[in-house]
Length: 308
Image 1 (cartoon, rainbow, N blue to C red):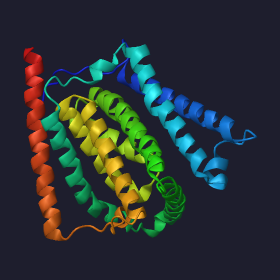
Image 2 (image 1 turned 180 degrees about the horizontal axis):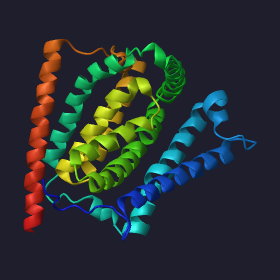
Image 3 (image 1 turned 60 degrees about the horizontal axis):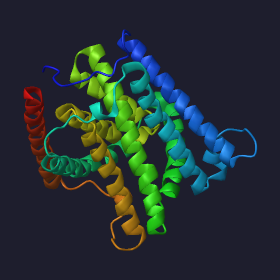
Image 4 (image 1 turned 120 degrees about the vertical axis):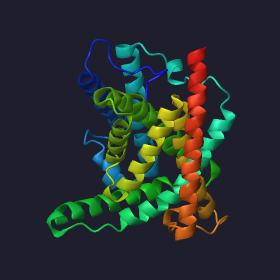
C-alpha cells in the first residue's frame, strides 16, 4: 500500500535508528523531570518516587506524579522532538480535511465493540499460568500486578464529580494525547520507515505501548488495544482519531466505575465477565464491519486530500 499524505517524523539527515534513540532519550529525560518535580513537591528528602509509590500511597501525590510524568515524558518530549528535529508543526498531525462526525462515530462504535471483545482476552490473560521454569518471573509478575492493582483502585475511586473530573484529566486526557503522540505518530512511523511494513510497525509500537505499563497479566488486551489504535491512525492518517479512541476507552471505563461506586449501576466494569460465545461472535462481527467502514472512509478522505 503506498504511503500517501504522510509526513514521517524522522530527524533530518539521520537514520531511523538515530531518530528512535533521540525519541526515547527525550522520553526518559521527560520522565526523570516529571518524577523530580513530584519529589520536590512532596518529599522532604531526595529519596525518589518510591516513597510515593510504595509507602505514602496517598491519592493526591500519586495523581500529581502520574500527571507530571506523563505530561513531560509523553507530551512535552515528543513535541520537542517534532519541533527540534523534524520541524513538524502541530497542525500536520491532523490531516483530515473532511467532516469528522461520521468517521468519529464509527471510530467510537468500533472502540466500544472492541472493548466487549477484549474482555475475553482480559480474562484469558489474567488466568494465564506459566511453566515451572518461569516460576521466578511469575512470582515477580504477580507481585507487580498486586502492587499496581492497589494503586489503580486508589486512583479510580471517586467520591464526587470533581474527583471524577480530575481522574478523567489525569487518567484519560493526558495518556490519550501523550501515548498516541508518542506511540502512533513517532514510534509507529519510525518503525514503518525501518521495516517498510505497516503491519509490523503497528505490532511493534503496540508491543512497546503495552510493555511500558509493566502489567504482564494485562499485556495481551492492552497490546490488542494498541494494535487497534495503530490501525485507526493508519487508516485515517490523522492523530485526532486514535486520541479520541484512546480517550473514549479510558473515560468510558472511569465513568462506569464512578456510576457503580455511586450505586447508580449494579455492574462493576472491573470485574466484567466475557460474554457468551454467540454474543462474542456478534461483537467480533461488529468490530470487523466498523473497521472495514472506517478504512474505506479513510481511503476516500485521503484520496480527496491528494486531489486537492
